[in-house]
Every structure is written in C-alpha cells, then in structure tokens.
Length: 237
View 1 (tube, one colour):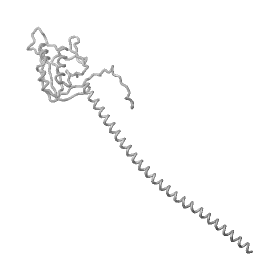
View 2 (cartoon, helix red, strand yellow; view 1 turned 180 degrees about the vertical axis):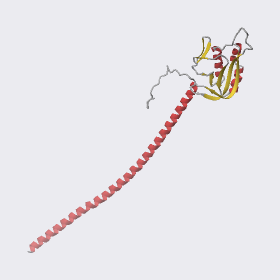
View 3 (tube, one colour; view 1 turned 90 degrees about the vertical axis):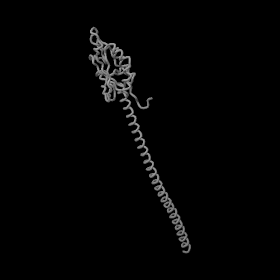
View 4 (cartoon, helix red, strand yellow; view 1 turned 135 degrees about the vertical axis):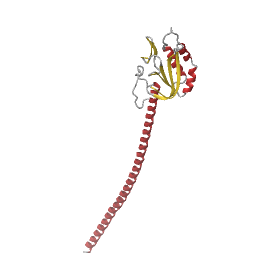
C-alpha cells in the first residue's frame, strides 16, 4: 500500500511537471506572436503613411509637369500663331492699316503737245516707281485695288498695263503706301528718277501724307507648286 502511494505521488508529480512545462511552452509563443503582430501592424501603418506621402508628392509633381507642359504648349502655340500672322502680313494676305502716303498719277496736259495725245502709263514706268518706293521705305503698297506682293507681275498686254493679271484703269491712278516715315519717303521721292521719267511722259506725281491708310489684302490665291508639306511626328528632328 505504501509502495502504491509512492508510485501515485511520483506519477502525480511527473504529470504536474509535464503540465507545467506544457503550459509554459504554450504561453511563450502567445506572448511572442502578440508582440510580433503589433510590430507588423505598426510597421504596415508607417509604410502606408510613407506610401501616401510619396503618392501625394508624386501627384504634385505630375500636376507641376502638366502645368509646365500646358504653359509650354500655349507658349509654342502663340509663338506659332504670331509667326503665321507675320508671314501672312509679309505675303500681303491681310489688310494693313497705318500711317503712309497717298500718291496720285495724273495726266499733265500742260506739258503734253497736241501731237502726243493722251499720256499713257507703261509697265516700265510703273515698275521703276514701285522699286524706288520700296527702296525709300515702303512697307506695304497697292496700285489701285491691287496689293503689290513679291511675285506681283506688272506688264504691258496689248497696250494696257496689267497688275496681278488685271488691267489698270486709265489715269488718274492712286497708289497707297504704308510707311513708318511718310515725310522721309516724300522727301526722297521728290528728287527721285522716277518722277523725272514720269514727267518726260507727261505724267505728274502728287503725294499727300496721311495719318491712316488702309492697304487691301492680296485677293488671288498664292501658288504653292514648289512647296512640299510633310507631316511632323513627335520625336523627329
């Protein structure tokens, strides 16, 4: 009986020790897992905050880039429009208004003899006059209703003067000239060879300075036979 009691006590002690060890082993992982999970959650929250900050900074940079690209596009577009407008002005495709001189070619019957008949303007005289006006500061000019551009042809056709393939009326003829220095142009033209040549043909040139003159635009279509238009793609140089 005493021996059985000892055995039972030993068994109980052993079982108690095993239970204690088992409980100790189970409690430690629970403590470690709880601590690791908290740290992981904290780290995740911190990482999420960093990601949010980075995303906000990235969005701000994208907005700055978009604003810059928009400004560059607007600037480039406006520059291109200005260049196109300037080219149109130079090509005579727009009506121009500004200070200038109104010239009038009239027949000088006082100098003409009875045998000479009505004074006639020739393409040679008119071309010489236009050339001198350009030399002395004419920026834009029109003969009658015809705008003079770089490729304007002034020629004689069957006894009549044609400008831009249209015949000019008989004298008197008005020439409108836009210039920033009207007085200077008049002073030069008063002693020009063109006036002397016109006088020889019994044609008198009068000049009046005007604060505002409107020169009509070139009414014909420009020939682009030798112009090749190609599509431009981004990235091409």
